[in-house]
Image 1 (cartoon, one colour):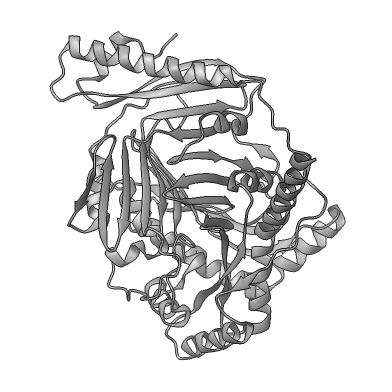
Image 2 (image 1 turned 90 degrees about the vertical axis):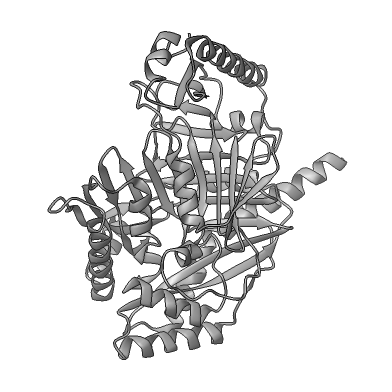
Length: 505
């Protein structure tokens, strides 16, 4: 049964120009990975979530076959429509992208998953240069897009609670459409759904023949874009700016790289098991694959509610409850950690306040400890009511980039980052998420992420620098943060080599 019915589509078609149509079926023999592998192709993605480090969130989302692709390169927005050559938009790329997103309006239908279609992808760290007067970094070794978004009207939603798959295809309502034209479009959408369902169900029992995840990974040849001495020198220079009163805190990072022959999807499969997080994503686009398990919400808008969740303060998990308790007490007694968290909480409150109705901003969770598979964090939660003259895009820009990956005050910290790092950050410390056609936004900070390009895997990690930071400790923090990503990569490389050996036997 297709929902909504044509009669309901006819009703909504007078108000909205995008209407999601859904067909659901039992899929207790399938997994999101299996479904994604069935439809995998360039310009596709998989979004998943684990809440609290142990419990799968209700939905996993697969997007494919975008009808629009948007890339920002060399300061211009390039738009590729399905079946057409690209068009370059000469204006400010951020405002051009906002205009494109605003063109699509979809109803919020009951019993539909929270995401039924929209613009999904990345806003790189340097996106803010199109909004604020920030210095442009000349050196860009990876040459990644500043922004890369896929507008998808075909979505596969896997419901972990009901063990169902919903295939959703959006009906794009033609201008001034009459009933007969809408009915033809509705029939066409149902036919597209049927083709996707047949493709999924024909492959529903296919299993991978790869062996289990090994206990130890392959040896990796990891390099960095700076030496330890260079990083320490930059920390000390940042502390000079702090002593001079320019800033209170700044996040300095380094980028690690290693050759890789493993399938990036295999890296993701391992990472989602070894380091599950609230935001997990796998993207394939423009010859680049992006694999990530980010713990940190950047900004979320649901209806008129806007929220952000600053994370600052980290300890590894203990081997048992007693060790967890001791590490928790140590973290909550660390004055440096607490001061840094309060500073970033204030920044998050100000970011939300710029787009919220007067008096609506609240801190609903303050400095609570949350436990994940490998680490524990100090977390706070800020929410407010989106002002009537603001939209989700405004909320994203107000919080972008997060203070937890830039510093405070944010703009001055970003100027210092540009000076001291001297290299474009690319996707690192930006945002990944979606703008849904129904007006919702969900985004996370692009950290704990691997970018796979041209046979190399890149991981960038940073540390928050304050007045009493120990430079050597901050250097080690960046290495420790990258370790989980490279552990997954090493396991994938080992599995790949073992599979090659088996294939030659």
